[in-house]
Structures are given as structure tokens and as C-alpha cells.
Length: 275
Image (cartoon, rainbow, N blue to C red):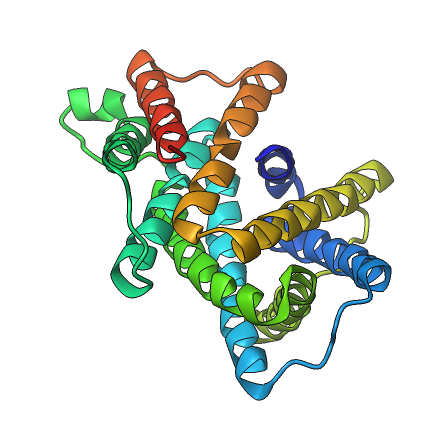
């Protein structure tokens, strides 16, 4: 929760400075290097089957797509609102786990899911334009919803892989796949990944972001090896508490009372899903 909260906040800041794609690529590359070190420490098995490699490729594409949409939302929208909207990934994860993996929710968890949906809706709408009868979603929200969907599917696939090969190997395979996907994406879309004329401080923070995010992913993957996605991911998704507080404190971002109510409701709902 804390790792992702910090990563998403910094991602929101630097996506606006150097672009969402470069922020994602370099932070993920730093994360891949840090996971290599983790593999050496835990002496993990690196002989996955063909099926695991295939699932890892699918997982890498899902994760990359999720963050590309997420960072794009950050680039054009308000950090606090985008972060709250992204909480929907927990709902997607829980829904897929319920429908396809036979995992179930308690009554309190069901109530929590409803609160997340309602809260994210309240936080995502541009209420000033609604009053002026010019209804539309706040900038970046559509991108965040797409990102949430891809993340939701990813964590269910990730749980399947983690139960077969363990959390360290899973994290390494996915990180490696993400870098390959982003390089291919860069070649196809002709988006450069160079950091020419980028301040050294900015580059350093992006690399630190990657290490923090990799640790967060590894910890959630570890949780998936001993628990169910329907419970693990909602707890981790409370990262918005961290992201929003950092945005308010350091970026002085302003949100309306209705949006603040929605954000608070979504956070309470996420917490409720853990019981």
C-alpha cells in the first residue's frame, strides 16, 4: 500500500514533466534490476514451463497497458481524482476472482465493493460542469478506468502464476516481460525513451520510484502465494490514502467537497473489503 502510494504520487508528478511513457519505462527498468538482486538473495528457480512463460507474457502486457493508461490519466488529470478512480482495479480483481476462480466475499466485503464503486463515481465526475449542464468525466478518468480494468485482470493471472512458481520468479518474469513490451511499444509508436536534457535529480527519483514499485509488487505477489486475490488486492489498493495525502500536502491540489466525500467513501469501502 505504501510502496504503490509513493510510486503513484511520484509518477503523477514526473509524468507531467517528462511524459508518461518515459516515466513508466525507466522506473520499470530500475525495478527489473532490483528484482534480479532479489532472485540472487532467495536463489529462486528460473526454469518455468512453457505455460508459465505464456501466462507471464499475458500478465506483462496487461500490467504495461494498465500503467500506460494510468500514467496517461496522471499526465492530463488531477492526481487525487485519478488515484481514487484507479481504485476500481480492486473491484475488477474481486469480480473476476468471484466469477472465474470461485472466491467469495462476506457481507461486509460486498458492502465495501458498493462503497468503492459509488465513491469512485463521486470523485471522478466534474461537478462544476454538471451544474452548467455540460456533463463530462474529469480529465484523465476514462484512461484511469481502462487502466483499472487491465490491472484487475492482471492480478488474477498473477495469482495463478505465483501459486506455480513462487512470488520472486513471478515478479522477475513479469518485470522482464514489461520491459520487452515497452520496447516494442516504443518501436511501433516511435516514442523515444532517451533521457537527454532531463535533470539528474529527475532521473534519480524515477529510478528510485522503480525500486519502490518493484518491492510493492513483490510483496503483493508474496501475499497471493499464501492468500486469495479477492482479499489481498483490496488491502493493497488502499494506496490511494497515501497518494492523495501526498498530493494535498506537496502539490496543494484542491478538490470539491463532493469529490472529497467520494474519495473518503472509496477508501472506507476498500478497508471494509479486508474483513
